[in-house]
View (tube, rainbow, N blue to C red):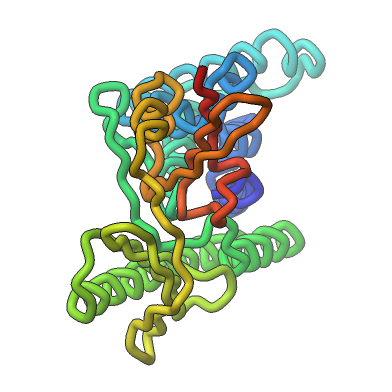
Length: 299
């Protein structure tokens, strides 16, 4: 999910009453809800899409990161906050650890809900898992969390934030159920090699469909109140040819393909060199250029 949603989850948890457990409770919950995303620091050092949602999001991180965050917050409390306010109550490390664990756990859980996926078993097994239940920026989740947070802040009551969090949990279960029903109907309706049923941006009961055919990916739609339909819109895989075979063997392509779910290829000539563009049909159009794509320049 986007980081604004993660932040709202931490803030709503705080207003639901968890901030009262210790000093720095709100800060710990909000930081913790975003904490696993510090893997973004790998990007300037050459880490790409393959570096995201891995080690800092997996089971080992869920066990270790709460201690790291709680330790950071304890150091801040000892060396900064209470030096500025000598009469301020000390933060309770055990409570900081509890709040860190709760907030950090919400992050990969929400990330798992969209089509980008999650690597729960990292660093032990480099395998992606996908729930395909929520659009990566879900406006309804945001509205519920903002409403609950603001209402609780203004009323100084925990009830609205708790109701908002419960509503989001029920909504997520409903969205996962709709995706599951959609998957079953697509599997029963079409004979395809692989497919994806993903949420649309605004209409909760609608899904977009992406199916793999022998030489192309085809798009379609599904509604909980109708049958799955495939359109004439396709993206050719373009995975044949010597240039593509050579590009696939390069380290950068291997890293990208470990992340890509529905890869396709385009071969172009630029500046006297053969360039193979590799993209993922989940996110890219036929031109194969953008954030979910790479270029391999062959000699």
